[in-house]
Image 1 (cartoon, rainbow, N blue to C red):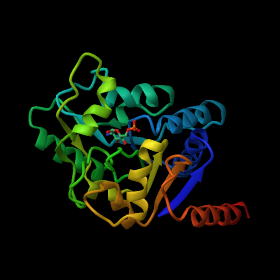
Image 2: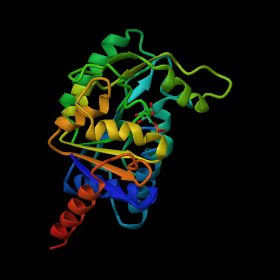
Image 3: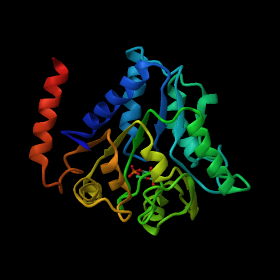
Length: 258
Ligand code: GLP
């Protein structure tokens, strides 16, 4: 696992955008997109590069990580609408190649299986962008999720529902969701997790330096051969080996600059 500690949230966005840009410039890329506030800076930076630096997404395909059950695609708070608002509508990735699980499908289990197959049929995800929940979830894989799980229906944890309540003023956060499984996420060729702020520090510590455990679902990334974790100082504040991560990053940057 590569750990990059940045001076500011803007730098987190820029570092994560560098990795995604590399995949996009290499050829038709299959992107895994996350919602939430953490990746917002990454999207802003990618949009800027699209506008100012000729970065085109016209040949890319995108799969979102998860979706609330019961919400139609065009619901304001669906992750489909969110990802359009925060990223897709501002770049040239064709809407016909944005895939999200359908939260309003009649048979949610069949929809989850269909989505998992669609990712495989697209050739798998090249780079998966991730945030982390305060309880260590990735996607909506709550603590105790199987480390080899596939896309499926999950029950949201109380803390996740209360963390996300701010997006549903006057309404209820759904109880159920569809989420790529930890096994599905692990199949991405590269994973980039971004975390910002001190409320993520304990989850980040458990993910990076704790044991691999279903109790901290993000810790499954320790088993991934190409996982990069990009943090601001606050999110990194509970890590023990910060000196090592800084030194490794410095040497890595020097190697790349050669
Ligand atoms: C939601 C999403 C996750 C995201 C998490 C953290 O639960 N399903 O993919 O990582 O929120 O969100 P935020 O970045 O806003 O803290």
